[in-house]
Image: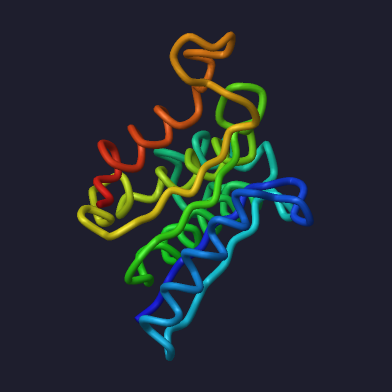
Length: 165
């Protein structure tokens, strides 16, 4: 058994999303003591902001005509897809920043989605946990009600677009 874990907090030492993910990972490891955990940390090792542009501009271009940046972007997209496809379960630890999805998370999603296996539904029904945290109160009747634009987007793309369970 294997687990893929994505962390996105830019402040690892005090990250509550990482703390939640640590609990989930501990439960996973207790249940599957010989499992491998593959990690990607976008908070401390973000993807280049130009990588998605490089892969989008490579679409429809013959391999021989790709720039080195386009080749690298395609290879990275395949790596991101492999990390999830090779795992039996997925764990996403993603905090809310400035009421929306952080740019480094959106870049990761956009790049991974360019891999035809991911956009073709290869993650359908794969078990996943989304550990997300909000700074403050976003409940009905509070001043920030409706300001969480991250969690609904994450649930939509993970559940409805990618089809994870």
